[in-house]
Amino acid sequence: MANLMDTLQQRLAESKAKSFLDPAFAEFMDQQDPLRALRNEFVIPARGEIAPGADRPDEPCTYLCGNSLGLMPKNVTKYVQEELTVWGEGAVNSHFKHRFGRPWVRIEETVQEQSARIVGAKKDEVAIMNTLTSNLHFLLAAFYTPTQERHKILIESKAFPSDHYAIESQILWRGLDPAKSLICQEPRKGEFLLRTEDILETIEKHGHEIAVVCFSGIQFYTGQYFEMEKITKAAQAKGCIVGWDLAHAAGNVPVKLHDWNVDFACWCSYKYLNSGPGGIAGLFVHERHAEDYSRKRLAGWWGHDKATRFDMVNEFKAMAGAAGFQHSNPSVLCTSALLGSLSVFEQTTMEDLRAKSKLLTAYLFHLLTTEFSAAILEIITPTDPEQRGAQLSLVFKGGKMMDIFDRLCAKAIIGDERKPDVIRVAPAPLYCRFEDVRFFVSELKALVAELYA
Image (tube, rainbow, N blue to C red; front, side, top):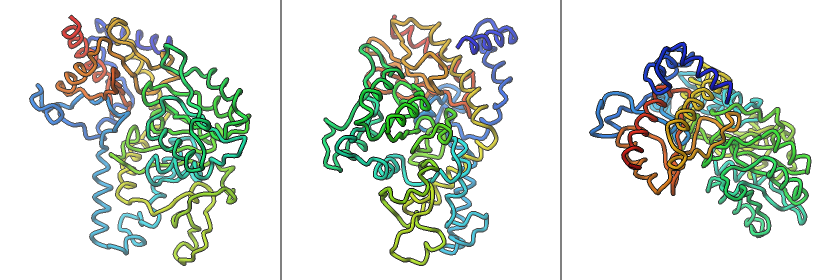
């Protein structure tokens, strides 16, 4: 944090702005941003569309909600419209003959390599398919193989509800009792975050009983970026399988699934990956499991050997790698929407995005901690930039969170709320500016002065 603040202080001096809240400082930072042109790749709703009656209705809204749903890349319209054209022109023939060179029978290959780069995987370790919770179920069906002694699954206590439901149901499906087979790692009393040493202590103590460790890469509520490599290594040393839900990590922070030796992972693509609501998801299976055909899996047609897939024989022969976990042919329209977003990611790298994200989030963190009293606002996301992505979770004291949230919405400032008292704010680096952060804090300051008077 010190280095980031040194950078911000240096830029403040260079900008000759009066303070960090001076519009001149944000303007200077945005002019210096090497990724500033990427914002033009997105459709940003107008203030009047988001908040009818707002002033300056034709200007872009302040969108700080990429952790929930990313903005629409302009290329999505292009790629989806092309598929609609091909569908209309060629119908079923477009599976094999495609005007734009993307035959539907191989549509997932158009996004496979780019997706693999984003999650630090080899191409054959990634499959683009289904939705997030479906993929988690299919992966657990193969990798959760409980025995009398090793039958437990370790998750965080406040896992995203869908993950909790899926994991609990997998335990029940096998005739086991979640009360005995599910370990929920709790934060220490009075704390929001999970300490890595506490997770490792649980693994050390119960590792011989744990079949699977399955955490989120970034915790949805607090925004905590878990030490994935360290946790994976410790759990595997105790004989556990390790899987990660990257819903809030993919496209947000650099991860190295292959190098970290992760067994499996899954992610959605509609948050930081901007593929649209309910967009197609992805999964990862490490290459060391690529030809482990003895592992029971829930099979489907698209996971069958490509060379004989259309022979229509009822003898399943799984493809090697993640492809063998596929089921139905993927949605062409959803895959094309993801391709539209990945075409923007192709113009940069996760390392460059991360560099901007760290600085942008550090700017937000500094303004919030210097402009607001801890008696009014508390940030529960880690202070260490290495342990967070492009999200800060703000606790508002005194039961005023919803009042603040509603008034922000009325000003066309979009974050999201998590009851009872948290507003999540996510300056996604692909399209958010320093001015968005500055304007949010400035308007929030005025609202707090009014509501806490």
